[in-house]
Amino acid sequence: MSDRNNKEFESYVRDIALNEEFCKLDAVSEIHHGITRYEHSMRVARNTFKMCKFFNFENIKDITRAALLHDFYVNADMGEASSAKRLGLHPAIALNNALKYYDLNEIQKDIIVKHMFPVTKSFPKYKESWLVTLVDKTVSAYEMLKYKVPTYAGIYYLFMMELVATNK
Ligand SMILES: [Fe+2]
Ligand SMILES: [Fe+2]
Image (cartoon, rainbow, N blue to C red):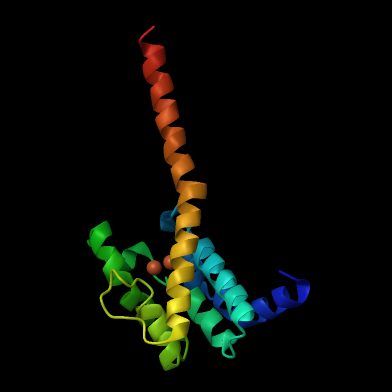
């Protein structure tokens, strides 16, 4: 991104990025697709911002901020829910957490609560919600391939090396 766009992006997200509760998403316990949920959220927000620029969206600040807040939860918020259940539960929890700190308009609420479509059954209502759900899926796939698959491949490799070594 250009310097100018970078500055614009940062001016939109700075207060959220520094929010003490939001910063808890950056803990090692909050690893998500091989990186922290904070880093994932930042990547989703940044790429949403870029797409908004590309498509000339007018409410770019609102969309970017909602994109940053889309996964605003910590694992403790999920209680005993299984990984599969978390997929469907976390958007509503993220929205609830976001509303504790920020006033959100209808589009922003829809962006957060529908971002897991089609796991959560209801259709995104606005083009902005479609945009963020697509950016989130693209970013998640990228992160899995870049961070998670290599981690598992590394563990598998070490395991196999150990196995081969003990068969000497
Ligand atoms: Fe999510
Ligand atoms: Fe996400």
